[in-house]
Length: 263
Image (cartoon, rainbow, N blue to C red; front, top):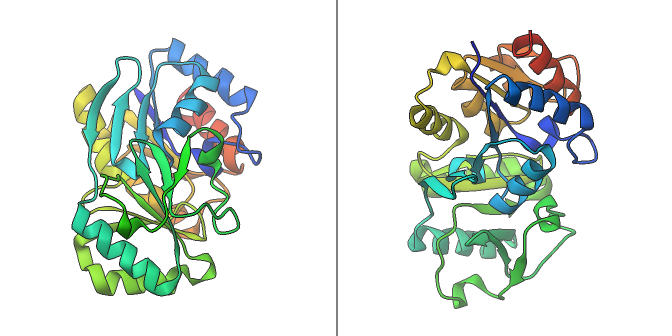
């Protein structure tokens, strides 16, 4: 029996306008009424996750920054939090400076950039989260950041390979969009977060259903008893999913809920 629904946001739960559809809200409220818990598992910031959750209007857990932060918004409790250390941040910033790559970090959930460049990354988080521009990161006092986002455009494979050669297994790298590389500490990903949340709730893997669309969702789907890849998912995710939905984005999410949860 499914006791927890865990889902990615962009290109999964959210529709093509990056909104929660009325049909998805109705289905999730039916699940909540049946006693099934709900978790948002996203690369987005906490502000952004909470803005989406407010539209749904049911109790939930927030797994943000690809698993670097797990919170219970109803109580304000932080279940898990991890941040990149100062030395690693400075190394990554220097790497990006040498290659002219645009970066984004998060200071107490505030989007922090050297200079905002919407042509490099029109971040949907900006609609919900405050941001600040601080100039050269290396000339600013260190602040803990759960994630560094790098906009690499069409050069993602090459940049990712370079990062791997420089940092090895010290970092976890993920993709939520085709032009982005997201960097977290080694051992931080959506799958590890799901194991932590499941242990906190006393749930078995078999009691979890997870939904996603991109490679950063692979660990999430691997840590659920039932895993659903929406139709617009990348091939790597489709290959490991229990079920590949016929519908894209929210239509695929709703399809999975009706097929496996509200049966």
